[in-house]
Image (cartoon, rainbow, N blue to C red; front, side, top):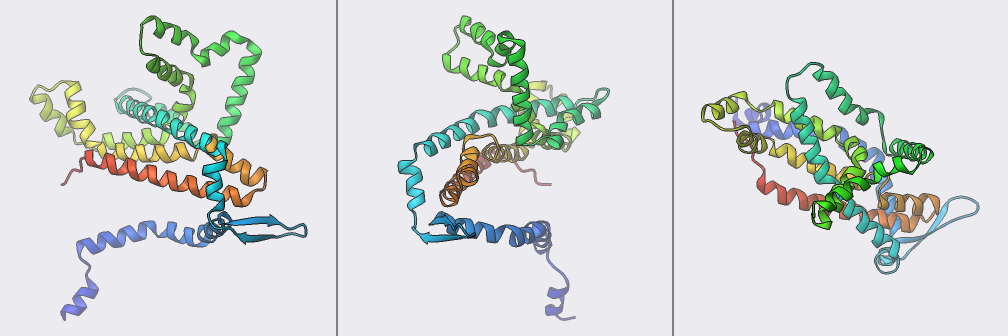
Length: 304
């Protein structure tokens, strides 16, 4: 057998790994080519044009270059306001969601009765809920609260917590942050399902021999958490942070998603709606890239 026939018949380890990677993303590539490539190209065309819907049906476009993009940043004050609001909401919610998800995963990784049922309960919101359903649930809760009186409403506004923290002489910024967490605890817990499952899988992949060796050396539970658990699941932490950033930016109820929907669908301004959608997509990609680049410096990858 010649060397050429051997090269054709046998792939190297790196070649097999590359082939497996391409096969893994092949369904996405096919789906993107069939269902997303043309609409994305058309939306980019709309964002660079002035679009007019014709009375007899169809539309007519006139190329205007970056006029829609300039209008968003220079003229439309609502765009910049909603964009800053969405970024601020992401910076607030992502650390809380990741920390709460890790805490829940640590608790559910312990051995106790009905552990499988408890895991299913925490993951249930991911199965049954979407952004639209969450809005319906929130509106229903708010309506019931209004019927029961203002005292019940204070529970969601966390007025009692604010007063208690103010008496402890804590900084106003910390008081506002903690009060906001309590006020939005329902929404934040609702978004922890996927991250909790990823953390749980990461925790179960850690070899028990590492903890046994640490116990022999006299390490405390706190030291084992920071010296073993956190480094071993650091790739999962990076994954959960990236996922949470994207999930926060694409949440149906955030200000930018509502602005894009109202502009493009409700007001039928397809040209400007697609322009702000492309701007928002570019910002999301930049934020994800920045987060991944910064956090990758602190990720530990175990080599077998």
